[in-house]
Image (cartoon, rainbow, N blue to C red; front, side, top):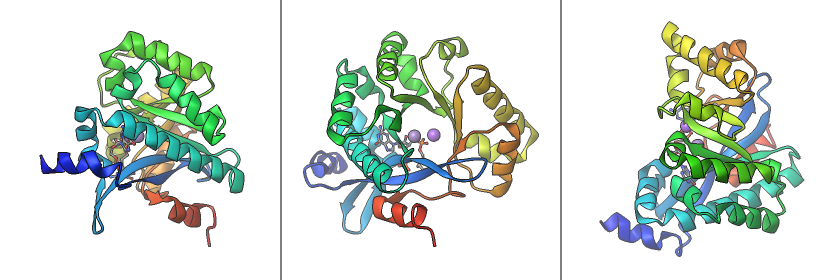
Length: 253
Ligand code: G
Ligand code: G
Ligand code: MN
Ligand code: NA
């Protein structure tokens, strides 16, 4: 309850910030983009990760205004990086079901792109399977609008949400983000079979894939042998604040 009171003031107090984790090409490790991850500097010595408070933001509806701030902040940063370092850089932003439900969400995204001068193809919105499950019909229409605008859409945590494959086949999306759980299982034959199947599914549907949670060279090599795609995980980089990200991934020594 105390946390809730503090969370309500966090945005006004400027306690939110974004960390960026690189998303790289499996084939050569080149940085293709980054995922923006929300952090809350609750006190000077206490920083919370999104998993500690995003559920609370969603329960209270605060996620709508915080989510809009996240989008604007991430797009601004991406526009700067594209200009200074990497013209094809793509920024991935998590979108919660409640944001997606708002009928004016596509228009808000359009405004953010306009104000930050970020081209739509440089933005990837991450939607969880559960968001598609709740209001599939409306989600489909909203996602179709976003993609007509040129924005990319990815299904986050893919493989963990029991979304129906027939529905998935009809969803206007660009990528599957394969949940890190599958990479962890790559040392077992069953895990290899699952990864292989998901990658083949993405290829059959004409989608790109991003393998999440990659921590070892072996996992990287195993996935590359299954298909060419993108990857994210501690092997390639931890989530970092913008300045540190830039020093680490754009000015490597
Ligand atoms: O590293 P971290 O604990 O931040 O990520 C945990 C989860 O929180 C991830 O599943 C991620 O999708 C979610 N998350 C991180 N940042 C955001 C955000 O800005 N908005 C939403 N809705 N979820 C986020
Ligand atoms: O669910 P989503 O992919 O949006 O959230 C990413 C979450 O996964 C963040 O909490 C991030 O810190 C975490 N993460 C990113 N890479 C790795 C990894 O290689 N291993 C583990 N265990 N967690 C990771
Ligand atoms: Mn995500
Ligand atoms: Na995920």
